[in-house]
Length: 188
Image (cartoon, rainbow, N blue to C red):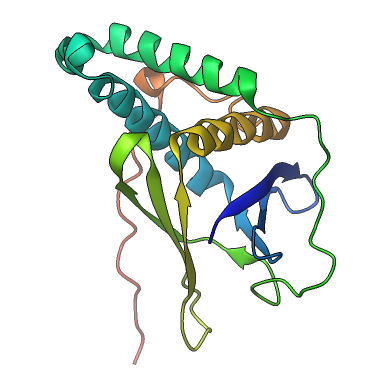
């Protein structure tokens, strides 16, 4: 599936992020990211793109793979800003006219597996595994380095719109994890 156009937006009535992908096959893929999934996924994608930027570039930049995290982050930010500068974020998203969406309803993503590919590309395998569903719905989405940067940019804008990061204590000040819930009691 090749991505032609992408839209990522926060939907306040759902308190979720809706991702819409218009494919080159004139199909539309729609899926939801929850707060929990998004706040875990975004830092992972950031880290993977930072590592890819440090590895890429040939002999002149191989030393970046062993550079300190600040240098790696600066290099990744530079790559992202260069990529974002050339992307078209002004054309409104246009859903395909003729064909039906890939799935009848948007998927509620519960699991994402990420594989790194050559040249900074990523493959996302997204699954919806719900308790009452007979089988999981899933899809794979390959993102070139350019699309990965654009995806991260749009995802970050949606997270800012959601205000999910506001009023969260920094990780160093976060409350310790709650102890595991006690096993359920039974009365016979």
